[in-house]
Amino acid sequence: QFAVIEDCNGELGGDAQLDGCDICVGGNTGLDPCPEEFEHNKSTQIAAYFIQYVTIDENPLDPNDFLGAFNGDICVGARQWNLDNCLNGICDIPVYGDEGTDLTTGYMLGGDIPTFKVYDYSEDMIYNINSYSQDINPWFPLETNVIEQFAVIEDCNGELGGDAQLDGCDICV
Image (cartoon, rainbow, N blue to C red):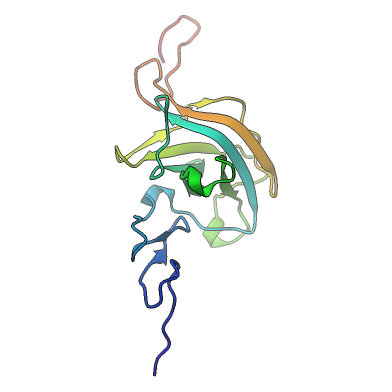
């Protein structure tokens, strides 16, 4: 006799499992794993950033897209942007801090300001969020932050998600 184990999707003997973004994928879920660049470890040090709207070139994110929080090049939190799974259509992204272990080296420390990126599933592209409705509050454990809008827009070179800006002489640099 053997025990039948329930997978993360609630299926007895199923083979769905949690991916690197803590999403139940595979098996009969119909979901693919999150992008490798958005994989992260959980930490006991956490803050939440609630964002009302996220757009790419003025189009809202699709349910298969991801929003990731970064400290430099290190992903410190990510969320698949399915509004059906969010509270009143406002999604949060957990942003994890360094708890002094090897798994969280380089994660947020008090006062750090996270940056954000979007994975566009339909284009298989990662874009930098380069337009914010307000300044991003520094990260501190257990803080809750609310931001109206994140957007991926074209910079002055016409690059979607680019960081070029006009200087004082109206030259794109």
